[in-house]
Image 1 (cartoon, rainbow, N blue to C red):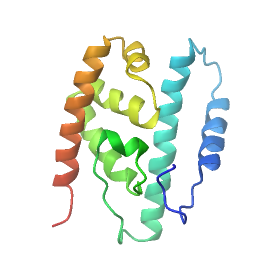
Image 2 (image 1 turned 90 degrees about the vertical axis):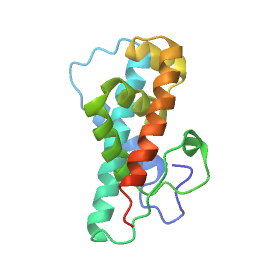
Image 3 (image 1 turned 90 degrees about the horizontal axis):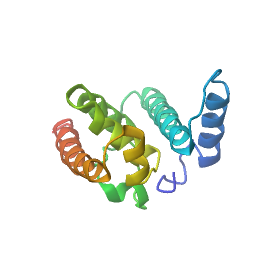
Length: 150
């Protein structure tokens, strides 16, 4: 959220509040550990951000939404992140080919998990997470470029 523009209608506190409300509303969830909680929180935040972006796009009737490129630096960049919908669509497409790589991106990008935490969630080695992360970034960049209007 730090990279969003000043006019962005979803503030970080609103995102956290909405995520909290959705997580608290979940009944009978046995949190195994911190990593399990962060994994679920990453998925919830992804849904909130994508839903918000889709709502904004619908209000604007699709006009002028800027496309983002996927890059590891995007998570800490000062550049605006305006099109979570494009990233979500690309992640959905990736999950059809490789669910684990899609999950790795979701955990690292939306959840902010470390390589080790991500490895724990998906039950693979940290080296496998890094390979998945690198391959997924390349695949997502290509997919998102292909989706750009020419």
